[in-house]
Length: 63
Image (cartoon, rainbow, N blue to C red; front, side, top):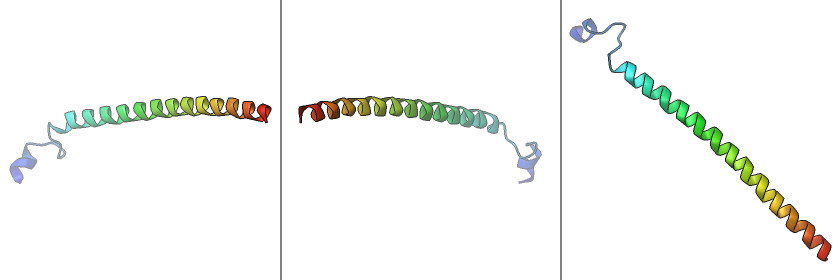
């Protein structure tokens, strides 16, 4: 255990830097993906409500 601590500084290993970079990249990818999906969902909900609103108006006129 002493040799491990002697070869690391502040208990950091050289693998920690690429791991942190990868973690930050994954988090950024996730945030961008979620934002894009929310925007797409809102767009589809708007289209769907517009489609149903047009159908509702047509049925009311026909009645």
